[in-house]
Image (cartoon, rainbow, N blue to C red; front, side, top):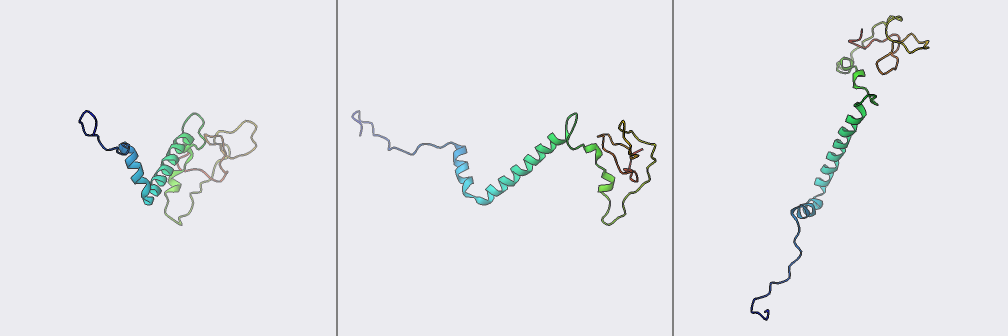
Length: 117
């Protein structure tokens, strides 16, 4: 008892915040940690995808994806269409007869992407 007559409170453990308590319990659950790691991997992949496909000169140009070809049923024949050698933009000094895409890469002379002129 304190000299003033007020009873002393017993020394207690330091109080934890709600987040500290949550994290302590969360770390004990290994399956939850694996789920968190998978979620963070998917999230990082999505963020990387945004940065790789956006901007003036994207690393991967989503406009070049030939979606009609990608959504064809399995084992279906490819969409081969003959290309006219005189059509399509060319790189200056290029000797190839293949038409150029918007990213400056050439398609094979015998292939024309669906929806292209």
